[in-house]
Length: 487
Image (tube, rainbow, N blue to C red; front, side, top):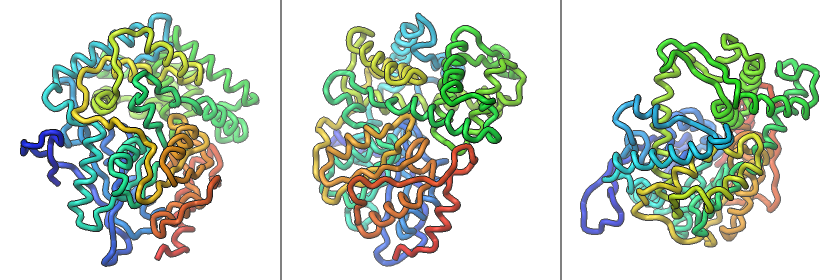
């Protein structure tokens, strides 16, 4: 559908074509309405996630609503945000490096981030300020109006989707009918609303997820080859020491066609791979095989396929993945209010606090902060208010107890700002509630969407999915949901 390109231009008539996907309601009626979705990012178009999760979300919401994935500005084919004319330049500019990779890494990260910000400004100076979250929130309200239902927003936002949802709820509190924030990031920190760099909550639970990983491994030695008669504490320390070793002793994997003839696995690479795999407990068996292969140091080990699936295609996938990262920075960095040209004194204390919160992954997002601090394409509209608002209908906020990137403390903080909202604790590992199914959580979502019924204060839903089982529990939960009718 068509929306205004620039909401701040009251006299212009330039438009933008939004890319949408819809899964029709399974039980249609004259009063069937729609739920808009966002699966996170920023920078992700949600297309693959929608294909994978739509059926599960239909089951959880009762099957009586259309589900619509809104491809946000800057992603997919919706005003794509790209900083480079070809993949060679893209790959060269986007060399990932964690801030603790060496004693000079942080300085390298900072300087490369400055170059990246300049490249993006040069390439995107005409439309790069039109992809901010506030404009996406307005796009959603345009969709609500175009649907011609009741003029109210129903929304389920996961990860960054919780930032988008929080923004829409704060901008249009009287237009909120139902809103689920799932895998919640703190919007105060995201926007740096205190006019200083404050985004430190991100990795609050990351090391606890590692603890869950090693405890699950030791408890299931047949499914986890890493166990090897170690205690959980010993295994955790072994993994940490592997991280440190890869700062100085890299593993080279020959890959035909890859730049330089092969792929180098170092500290930064391993940190990024393992961190991302912690999002999805159903693949932790593969994560264990990856770590074991790295511990052996054998560059031809089959286990390395679990670190980098499809090694032969890595070169092409690498560049396309980096385009998504450019969209991430284009959106996130245009939203951030605080900027500086100096690594000190504003930035270093925040980075150190992150590092202190997680010895494994505290430096994982150093490059994000470095790029956003030096960004020169501010969004045409940023949400400048706070989130202490009362929406027309209360929000349902879902926080995982062990989430590597959106910790429970963020969900709790957000629930305390939106008046009348309720926090549901989803007692699971992984990122957001979709990664490990809970019948209790699914029923709470269904009751909220169908009847507006909020779970009781302090509700905690358990997950009956053993770690290292290779399952996410959704088959069982969906079967149980079929036995109960939403309408």
